[in-house]
Length: 511
Image 1 (cartoon, helix red, strand yellow):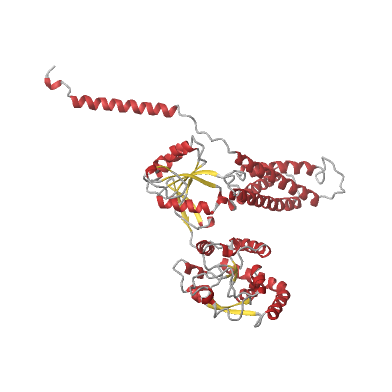
Image 2 (spheres, helix red, strand yellow):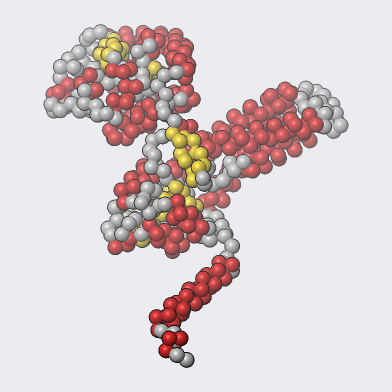
C-alpha cells in the first residue's frame, strides 16, 4: 500500500463518529417503538367523589323532569295500558328518555372533573348534551313517523334544563367551599418566566375555587435561583418541566409566558406528559378578558386567540337601557311606600332633610345629581377631612365613621339608603348595574386604567358590591370594576342583580 492510499487518523475518527451516531439513532428509534403507550394517571379520590355527585344530581334532575312532564301531559285518570300511546307507552318512553338523557350529558363531557365547578362551560355542556338528545329524538320520531306529544317535550326539556343547572350550581357552591378549605385541589406545576409565574401564582391564590394547588415552579435559572413565591420550591428550568412533573406527581402543568415556551417546546412537553397523566394547561398573556370575547382560530396548526373589542354602544346597550327603565320602574312602584316610611324615620331621628343629594361623575365624565336617603349628620361634608385625618384618596370610607347616624348604620347595612337612586336610573343618569359613581375629587385622581370606569353608566349595584364590597382591597375592587366594563353583558347584569338581592338580606362588607 502506498502512503497516499493510507487513511489518516482524522478520517478514521470521523468515520467512527458517524457510525456511533447511526448506532445511537437506531437505539433511539428502537426505544421509541417499544416505549410504553400513553396512559392516564389514576383518578384522585376527590375526582371520583365530585363525578359521582354530578351523576347523582343529573339522575335526580332528569327523573324529576320526565316525571313532571308525564304527569302534566297525561290525564291521571286514563287507564294505563302499555300499548296505549297516550298513557302507559309514555312510561316506557320516559324511562328510556331519562336513561338516554343522563348518558348524553356524560358524552357531552359535563361530568369531567376538570370542568365541574367551572361555571359557564359546565352549563354549556349540560345544555349541549340535552339539546343534542332531544334533536336526535325529534329526527328519529320523524323518520319512524311516531307522533311524540309536543306538550310532553315542551314541559320536560325546559324543566329538565332548569333542574340540571340549579343542581349544578348547588354542587359548584359546595365544591368551591371545600376548595376554599384546601380540599379537592389539583396539584399544579407552574412553568414560565419569573414575573409571569409570580403573577399567575397570585391569581391562583386569590381564586381557590378554581382548584389549583401550586406545589412547584420551573423558571429560568432552575433550582439554583431563589423562588419568587413564598413556600413554593423551584424544581428546575423551563426545559425541566416534564421531569419535575414526573418527580412530584402533579395533576396539572400550567405554562405561562416565557421565551422558552416556543411552539416546538410546548409540543414536546405535551408528548412528554402523556405517560404521566398530567394535564397541560397553557395560560395566554391575557388578563381579565371574558370567554365570549375570545375566539380561538387555528393558523397552520397554531391556535390564535382573537379578542373582540369591548362594546360601549350599540344594540346591547339599547337593550340595557330598556331593561333598566322597565325593572327600575317596577321596583320603584313596589318600594315606594316603604321608602316614604324610612324617609319619615330619617326626619324624626336626626335634624335635616330626609333626602341627601350630591354631585357625582357619570358616563364619559358627565356630572349628575345622585339621590340617597340621608344616613349622616348635616355637617358630614365639612368634617370629611377631619374624619380621614386630612388625606382623601380615590376610595375613602371608614368602617367606624362617626358622621353616620344610628338609623344610618341600619340603612347602610342593608343598602336601603340607595333605593332613591332608582330615580337616577329612570332618568338615565345611572344603570341598575355598573361601577358605583364617585365624586369629582376621587375621579380627578384616576389614572388611565381607572378612567375606563367612565366608559359605562354608573350603577345602583355592581360586581364589586356583590363580591365583598368594602372588605375588598382597592386593587381587588378596581379590578372587578374594570372587568365589568370590559366584559359587560345583559345576562351578567341579571346575575349581579340576583346576587345583590342576596346581599340585601345577608349583607357583608357594608358600612
